Image 1 (cartoon, rainbow, N blue to C red):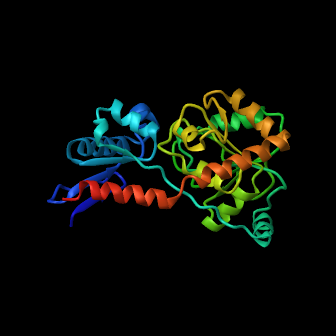
Image 2 (cartoon, one colour):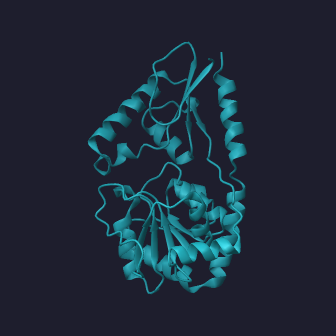
Image 3 (cartoon, rainbow, N blue to C red):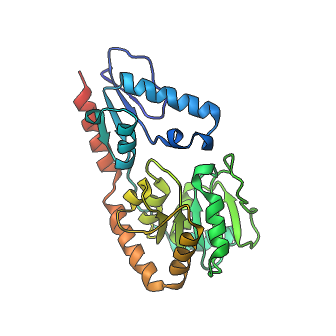
Length: 277
C-alpha cells in the first residue's frame, strides 16, 4: 500500500507506506480533568506518535490547527479539511410521526451530543432555567460520563427531557422541527451537530471563540459558554423573535451548503496524493 490514514487516534507502526493522521481536537491538553485518566494517556501517546511519525496531519478546523501548532506540531505538516453535511429532505408525514412518537411540543430547543463535562450541560441547564422563555429543552444523545447535569427522563412533558440515542432519520427531523438548536460546548475540534442543525435550517446558538463559531461562519447567535446569563439572553431572543429565527435559518442553510462531503473527500484525496511515494 502507498498511504495509511489513521483517522481516530490509533497510530499503527510505521511501514514502507506514508502515514497521514487525523487529529480531531486537543481538548485533553487543556482540561484533562474533563476526560478519563486512561483517555488522556491514550490521546497523549497518539499525539506524540503523530508528531514523530506522520508525514501530514489532517485537522477539521483552524481552531484545531492553532492548537496543534501550540502543542509543537510544525505548521507545514498540517492540512485543514472541514467536514461536510448534506441536508435531508423531510416529508410532512415524517414530522407528524416523530412529533407523535416522542410527544414533542409545538416549539422546543434542541441539544445533541454525548453528556460529558466539556459539553457544558450544567451551564446550559442553568441558562434554560434563568431564561424567560417557556420553551422546553430536548436533549438527544448518549448519557456519557462525568456530567452532573440532570438530563431529565425519557417521555413525559418536563421542561428538560432526555430522549437518549435516536436513529439518524429521527435526528434529521428533530433538527427540522426545532425552534432553535443550542450548543454551548466549551471546546470542540469541529462541532458536527452545529453543521447538521444548520443544514436543516435550525437557528443556532453556539459558543463564541471556538471551533463551532468557525463552523457557523457568521450564521449563528454566539454566546459566552461560561456565562449562563449570556446563554439565557440568546434563548429569549430566539424564542421571542420569529424574524431573527427566519434570518438565522436562511443564513444557516447557506453556510451549510458551502461545507460538503465532496469537498472533504477531494481535499483528503489531495493529501493522499501529496504523500504517496
